[in-house]
Every structure is written in structure tokens, then in C-alpha cells.
Image (cartoon, rainbow, N blue to C red):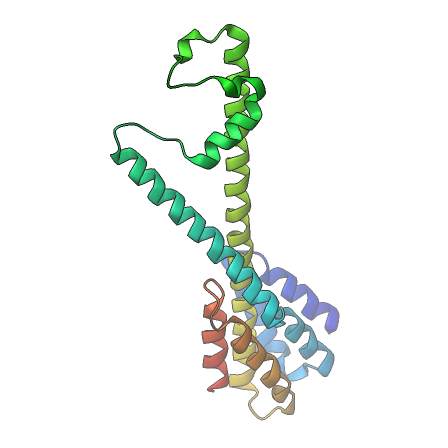
Length: 207
């Protein structure tokens, strides 16, 4: 039975409505036969990270979003000015990549005066800077995607718990879900992305 439950949980990780329906129907048939070990598999799937780790990651994402907002505000101000300033951090990265070419004062010497080798170095430097920014943006998006994917998986697991609570209310094994559900509520309550898990757990506990 433990092996079958492990397979059902694995199927829930797929973002596919068909497999979700299959899992829910099979689980409904198995509910009366669940054991302590199978319940523990479900609890493990719900197990939140420590509160401190969740909050630390939340603070990291908030700091990154704050930096992005500040950069956007700077860009807006630059567009309103008489000339476009690429920003201090961008200039510093370009100067570092250019090396000796950083000594060229763009306000006094036109870009057209650079020879072919200098232009090639400039192109490579700019490409490196933009690639770095692109990778930084990709990492941020991946973090959000990972957390969102995890939230949807845990939501589907909570649907199984909800089934068990509704149809097996007299089963003493139901009590094993109480503490884990409270932990989820506390861990994700103030999380920007995962807070719906806390709300869902609260709804299950109220039953």
C-alpha cells in the first residue's frame, strides 16, 4: 500500500488534470485501508521547510523585487532627462569589461572614432554585461517558478487530506494530520507566494 501511495503522490506532481482525477478516485477507494505509514507519506509531502528558512527565502525575493523596482524607477527618470544615462552599475560593468578602453570619454570622443578592434571589444563587453543581466533575471524567474510549482503540488496533496477528513472523520488516523497542518499554516501564513497553502490548511482544519 505504501508503494501505491508513493506512486499516487508522484502522479500528483504532474500538472495534468487527467492524472489528478485518477489519483483522487484511487485514493477515495483506498481511504479505508490507509495505515500509519501511508499517512506519513502524505504528511512528508506536505512537510514545510523550517519557518526561518521560508522567511529567509521570502526576504531574499522581496529584496530582489525591491532592487528591480528601484532600477525601473531609475530607468523612468533617465528617460525623462535630456539624455539617456545607462546607470552607474551598468557603466561600472562595461568599464571593467573594456579594460583600457574604459579610458575613452564618451562625452568628448565619438563612438565612430573607435577602430575595428575597439568596436569588437566594445561589442563583446556589452554582450557580456547583458548576458549577466539576463542570467540574473532567469535565476529570479526560476525561483518563483519553483515555489509556485511546489505550491500547486502541495495544494493537490491537501485535496487528498480534505477527502480523508470529510469521508473518514471517525478514523483515528485523522488526528495524525493535525500537527502537520498547523505547521503548514504557520510556516506559509505570511509568504507572498505560498500563503494560499496556509489558507487551504485552515479551511481543512475548520472541518
